[in-house]
Length: 129
Image (cartoon, rainbow, N blue to C red; front, side, top):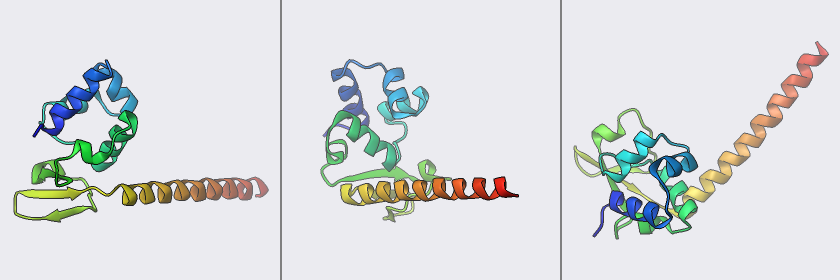
């Protein structure tokens, strides 16, 4: 079975993109994307989702047959992954769920709309002072 990095490399080459072009499309640094292709680190679940959306493939095609991406403890330091379940001291598995990710994105969009409305309200209140 091909690694995630090998799959990313194949997809990028099939679409005739440079690492710089795909990293710009995904909104990540070229250095970060390069590490993903080299299997030196793995993208966070949100970036996996962006990749699957851009290439119009199911996230499961990026992941192994079990739908799990293994991350070492070092790769997770300073990151919050609510999908993580610990299976040993050295690895954490991230389970993908398209429906869950879509619901999270919808919730994020609703939060953004609420924050925008709050900002407008505060601006109007400040104008009246």
